[in-house]
Image (cartoon, rainbow, N blue to C red; front, side, top):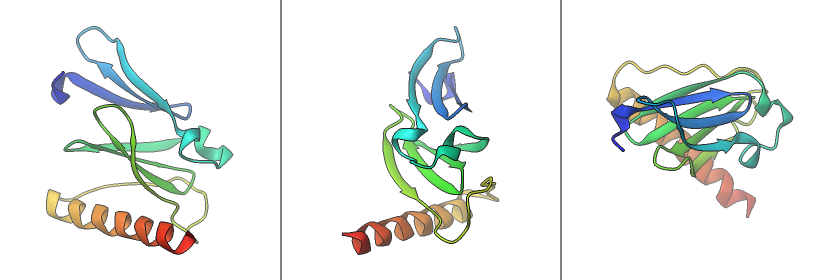
Length: 114
């Protein structure tokens, strides 16, 4: 299905892809499988760009694949606390730079943890 026919939602700790034509749920994922913090059930924010869904909740930033909701990366934003994560982008260049920086931070955290 074409991405422009899909609505991505975040509610009650779940991210889902909804068919805009008939409202059918195409796929859904529970954030608690990616975010162990119990606050993942709280309010968050979602942003879609290209084939990626960015979800900010409970002080954690998660990147999911629009195709199936699989985890691409996550950044626990160490030292930032567990509050609401607000996201914005000015243009694709700025968003790409921020996303690459967050992904690099997540990759460094994974490497140092192992």
